[in-house]
Length: 192
Image (cartoon, rainbow, N blue to C red; front, side):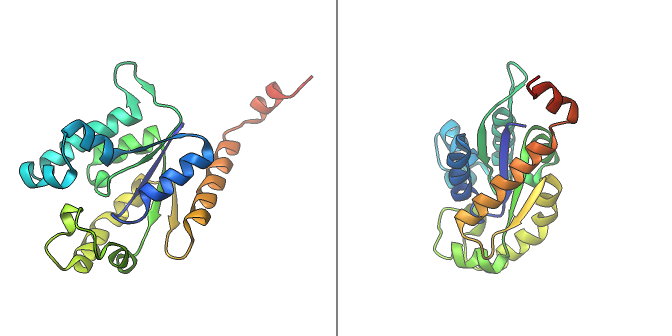
């Protein structure tokens, strides 16, 4: 699979880690929320306020499917690192699409850690209105098992630096690629 998708809670580092990972692997980086904003012509927060969460999730599903599979040709998009929105795993069809069309990495962060990172953030619709720590705890309880269901690999973001996270993910991806090389493939690639 040539798409590496990163899932996780809001503030878990999907965009930051994704950018660094894409640079390291020589791939294009795509943020599904930025793609969505470009298509919608407004920010996620604005769209949420006007159209509500259900409509946003519909648009998000369409963008994820397009990013993972070229709808016109039915061919997989190649060579991207895709940072998904925090709620991308809420719909079963999104989890299935990601799991089937990408190698999915879950950046697992504790609600306490996320609350520290996001304490001044005013752009995330589901965290507005006070009590962000409580909301993050509730979101984590609702979503953690969904991220795990979608993921092929999970890494805890608690202590490692971005550089260490990228190294861990890149090494795991490389090991995964090596594991898919069969003895027959190795023989056919060996010089006579």
